[in-house]
Image (cartoon, rainbow, N blue to C red; front, top):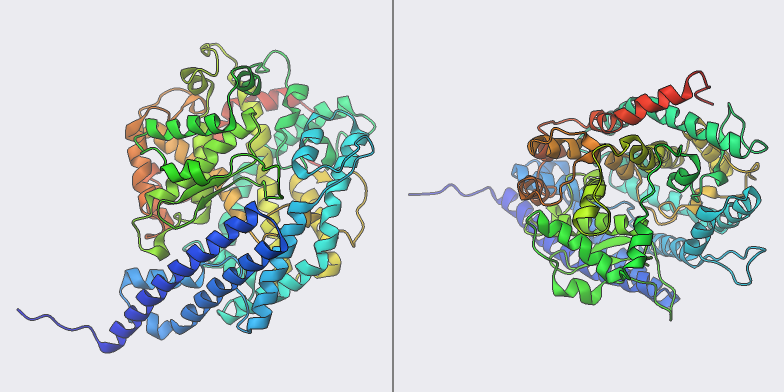
Length: 581
């Protein structure tokens, strides 16, 4: 039997891709290790090492991507063609070819991230400057509008010193994106979703249109309650001041729950109090989350996870406390980095972060260029999907809550969740809407701040406590902007998590309200989820979505079903009160 030899041109291109893929794996491990050291030992030295490793990885990626011309890619088999396409889109920021400019880009991003991590604010009532974590706690607890404004204004001042660096970052990142054939970095980001970038933008607009009516009703209800509490600060028909939500960015309103939920529906269970009463430690909180995945049929985490993760803030050095999940060697060296507080909120966050780790572990057998989620929204959706299963019944089954009663008012719990997840939607939609326009040049540097607040007023119905100067840079007060992390993934994740939740509930034969369904202890559902996770990015995302849901298009129908009892309740409560701003 004879076999036809592949053409020499195809062999050489395929071999070049394979060699480049192996090299990128090595460089990515090196860069991720340097990033870990920098994030957990902030210093000029660690920043320089991380920037150098980042530069080497990005330059190698760009070099290989440019070698894979359209004519060369056309000779590859479909799997390698997909690898070549993903390679071209694999970086959130692409450095220019010039090594000096590439180093400058890496340095400016590292410096902005370091500025954010090391920022401190001294309040008039405090003797020492406070970091973001402590400021956020003060803001969450505050019922004094003057104190809330001082906290909010103090933290938002962190962006001003980044403004020049950010404008230069935009120039350099756009130069790198144009080197790969994109108009700008925004177009490159929108090209990562197995559809043309213009179609992706339309899909995002469609999804926002599906959920906007529910958001506007929730906004109107919250405004009604806040206007009663703070009549001198809240216009009952206009946008709400951003400092009154108990959250630094007004992206979650959950801290308002105890103040605005009527007593008849308010949930009184306090997970934070139960955790503290039982003396649960941060590491034990992570153990609870691990056992959630074990109940679905997944293996326990490796020993190195417990040895190498950062669970609490070190006392001897500056670190990046922003919670994140790490796959350091793209195999089994899984870690999380958090400054865990023993709170119900962090209990949820830990479940979310382990969702990332288990997703990373599930696709580790894929070729390196396929070791990622179906699209970046899937990674975030999986983490949040697990959070949806942290129900009263789940907490009871693990000994952290009393048994829920069948007649417990579901609307109270739904209002609490909506203040987090529905309130987030326009914020998640707005950040990259703004950055896309910045990258395209539609928004020049002198209009950064004005355009930011115009967009947030239009989409979120919020405003700053007072007019903000044009030389401020309030977008820089949100980590993902100085760190150059695309944000659309979070908006898509908040849609997808409910779509996946509904798909798994249906597959499990669940007949109760969608908001009461938990994955915990359902290995059959876990097996379906694992099949999707193991695909990584090897196939277009509609195929991964179909494995769990039977659907090939993103839809907010699951979210709307989940919150339907709340939606009906909100309309009854509003009954003639103004909606919109």
